[in-house]
Length: 410
Image (cartoon, rainbow, N blue to C red; front, side, top):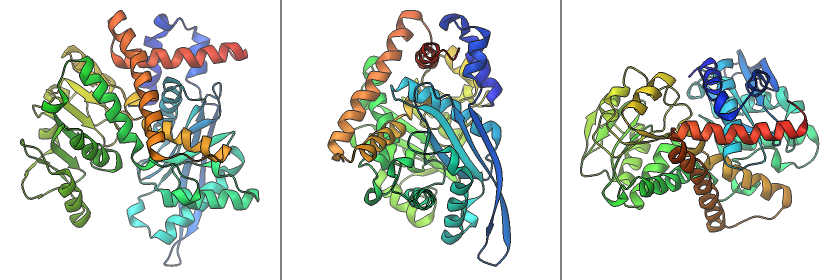
C-alpha cells in the first residue's frame, strides 16, 4: 500500500472523527525524514555505498518508536507508510509513543556477518543525533535480529560514552532485552484471535488455519496456535507452500525448514502454490509475509471468514473493499501485530527503571493490554456498523489528535 492510499484512508474517516483539513495534514506529515547514503568496506576489499532511511511520525504521545529493516526493496514511501502505521499502532495499544520506521536498502543474504555489523554501526552513526531513549527508540524488523540490535546499541553507547539500554529494543536478554520479546508479535496476535473467535462464535478447537509467511511471526504463530488446539493446515515461505487438511506437525515443519531452508517438500504434506493457500477452505487466514500480498487480483480467492494481519499492510485498499463485501472480518495489522511493540515498550520500561520482569508477568500484561485494545474497537464495530480496520483507525487517530489539540499543535 502506498502512502497516498493511507492518506486517503484518513481523508475517508475525516467526518467520523471530525477532523479539519489542517488536522489531516498534520496527522499525515512526518516530523522528521532522514534519507542518507553511507559506505562500508566489504570483505573482498571493495567499497559499497548503501541507502538508509529513518522517518519519525508524530511525537504528541511520546518519543517515536519503530523497527529497522534490512531489505532490497526499502524506499521512502514504504518507510513513511510503516512509520505512520506505527504511530497508529502505538496509539491504539495505549502506549506513550509516536511512530517511526527505518531501513537499509540491502539484501542481507548477500553479506557476511562481519559486513552486516559494519552496516549496523554505520547506520547508527548516521542517525545518532536524532535517536535515543527519549527521542526515538528503534527495534528489529524484517531481516534484522537481536544481534543487529546489539551492534547498534554498542555503537550508540560508544558514541554517547555511557550505557543507554533504553535506546533500542529487541536486544539479547543479557544486554537488557525482555523475556517474551522474541515471539511477542505472534503471541499478541494469538491473544487477539482467540478473543475474536469467541466474539464471532467460532470454536477454536475445530478451527483450521492457513499461514502465509513462515518467518519469525508466522513460525511462532503456527507453533502457538497448534498448542492452543487450532489446526494449522497450511504454511508458506518465499519458496512455496505445503498443505495437510488433517493438520501439520508444526515442530517438525520448523525442523524441516531449518535443515532445507524451505517448508517445501515436507514429508506428510502436499506442495501447493501460495495462491492455492490463500483460497483454502479454512476459518482463519494469517498473512504474515510482506506488504500487499492480498490484492484486488487474488482477494476473491479467499474463503476464510477471519483474516489476522500479522504482516504490516498485507491487504491493499482495493482488496479491503472486496473482502468487506464478502463479509470477511479483518483483524487489522495495527492491532494484530502490536504484540511486538507492546513488549518492546515493556523492555524500554525495564531498561529505564532497572526492574526486570519474569516471562509469565510479561505475557500476562501483554494479554490484558492487547485484548483491551481489541475490545476498544470491537464495540464501535458493532455499534456503528463499521469494519474493525475503520474502528481501529478512528480510536487511534482520536487519541493522537486529542494529545495534539491539548498541546496546541493543531
